[in-house]
Length: 215
Image (cartoon, rainbow, N blue to C red):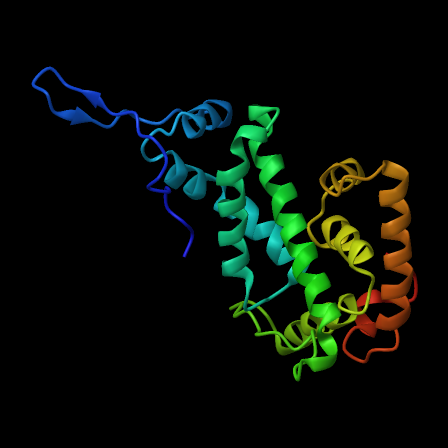
C-alpha cells in the first residue's frame, strides 16, 4: 500500500467563522503541490501519491518488467520523496524528480538481486506474469524471455535500454534521468542493444521478434 501522510508532519488547518476547521482544496499545479508538501498541508501527501503513482509505476514496470516487488518499490519511492521534498530544487520538475527516484530504487533492487543471485533458488527472469487480456501465449513467452535476457546485462546498460526501447524515452531524457552525459547514455544503450539482439536471436521465442537487423 502506498504511504499516507506522515502523522509527524505539521498541519495547516483553517477555521471557519463558527470555529469549525475547514480543509482547503489542494493546488492543481505540481509546483504549488510541492509548496503544500513543504508546509505540511493536510492531504498533500495523499494528493502526491494519487497524482503521480501512474508515472512512478510505469517507469518501474518498464525497467523491471512484471515483478512481485513493484508495489513495495513504488511505496519506497514515495517514502523517499516525502523525506527529500525540501531538496527538490525546481518544484515544476516534480514528476521528473520522482521518476529519477524510481530509477535509482530500481537500480538498487537489480544490483541487490545480482549480488545475492548465487543463493536464490529462482532465476531473476522467472518473475510472476502480469495478466494481460490481449496478450497471446507467444507474446507472454517473449516478454518473459526479454526480461530474462535483460537480467544478464550490466545494471546501468539494462536501465538505459529499458528507458529508451521499452518506455520510449528520448535520449536526452535517458541521460537526464540516469545522471550521465548524453554520450554515456548513447554508449550504454548501444552496448545493451547489441548484446540483447545477439542473445535474442539465439532464443526461439524472441528470434521472430528481433528479425535479421538490429532495431
